[in-house]
Length: 243
Length: 75
Image 1 (cartoon, each protein chain N blue to C red):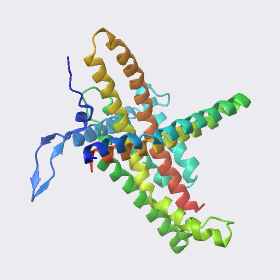
Image 2: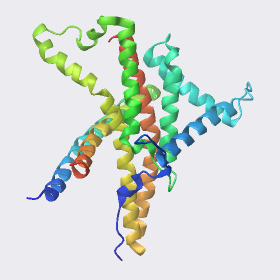
Image 3: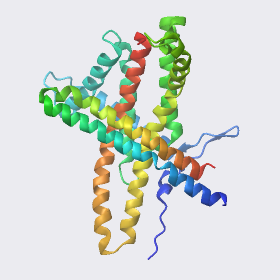
Image 4: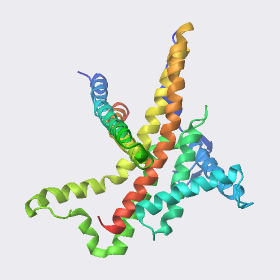
């Protein structure tokens, strides 16, 4: 029984509503559908759950409040206590990536964040925001970010290009970190499921490993959302405080 | 050697990067266990850093995996 393994087939983009405007393919795809569902779910959770606004929260209100407090604490610690203005952005980023990752764990669903263009769009927004905030707040002095303090002048010749390069590489590392984690995780799940499908009674072993991998994937889904959000906070804090 | 074989060899070699990921993740959690063993009260403060460190170390290994996929499917 030769079952053909196509572990990467799960990432193909399917057009649900074909839309072609002036030569551009703007179709509504399955990736866009999952993104829409993620946004709708987050909105429903935060709006409907806190509607009663009870002093002693019920279950759903507790969940929404815990999410809020978690991100608010992250913003306060890493950006600084007076910078609550960035909270809506970080909260949106965190909950969107969290829900998009978790929706991908549903069987037969699609993982939007396994597309490099989706994660790159998010990372590009973060990078442009951080650079703009730094330049607007500090002007030309923003470039002192690349000149570390207390370094002998000769070493600066080597260090400044390295610092500059590691700054410019940030949108790529942010996006590839999330994309590669999701891609590798789901590909591994598909491969082990393929093993289980092509064996008989021995399918117990790949299935057991797959069960553990699914648990790990849930952890990775939550963790990668947290890492994206906290790195955004760290970059913003660095741009505002310049050290 | 034709391109298809070279691609497969290249993809396999790129996965050697995951060795670094394994060592890095081991280091991070070893430090976490050590610090919690010395000072259990610090667990709440140290654990977020441990998870952040784990994710960053894992990410570096997965960059290698991304290169492997790049070699296999883009070139």
